Image (cartoon, rainbow, N blue to C red; front, side, top):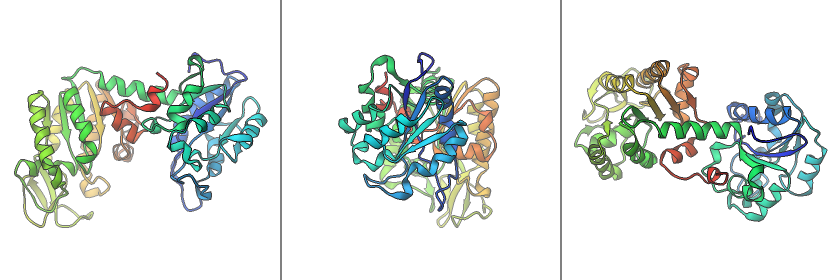
Length: 393
């Protein structure tokens, strides 16, 4: 963004304002709006007119009133400290009139892009209609960078090289993830948690190739344990992924990656926030019991690996951290990541549950970078090319 002259320019910015709302459509979490604010403020401060485009929900090409971006105007005005005009369409005469009406120092928020099915199909004509609203195009929506949609991957082709680029948020995301993936292999630790191996196959595979240690946590750990012949009771498991888990264990060993699978767990009979009955070796869980959090030795093993790390990539919790009785494993890892960061390590946190855990336990200011893009970060970590990034490279 430093290379642009925004004065008297209409700046078309793809933002990610897909935010949660209550039944009255009031925004309940403005994190994504606040994350985009620095880019918008910079354009405003330099005398440009930000023309903001985003999706909200999945209206499927229909005008669904409760998914109108008009409900976000007040929240955006507060975040950027400027008047925000609302355009009741995102293309055509209505959108053009709203943009023409705005003065320097004011912004325009376009109606939901996904009111048109052409947005998600990556339609070239729709992208060209969007491009007509701006002199410069900035993509600041990392959360949608893995989608080949009209506003993220196609619209860029209608702007010359010197008139398109990353917004500040997008730039920070790409730089931070690239930095983490490009770090020294032996001193890099990836913490991969969450419920299912199936949703993280690509990430684990790519991490085995690129990092020295992969710490497995959460429900997916039981699939690995059962694959090794362990008894896991009624714990969460993906029986159709047992062969894959075995294969990942073999691959990690062959490539010199230390794959840390939990060795103990807190067991209980019911999926509820009641005290654990006891700590149990993870491959010896009695029938009728389930594991809901890493046990003390698993925590110690993880902390030892993190203590000597120089780079940390964390995606997914160690247990059911939403339950106070089973939050200990995730909280201990969060503390260890914060400690390692204080000692000079670079820590990258991404994925909804990891971010929620870091925020819940008060460590958000004690890590290096928190990614705003769940699916986009996962695909980046898998080594995939993101369409929204490639369009601007």
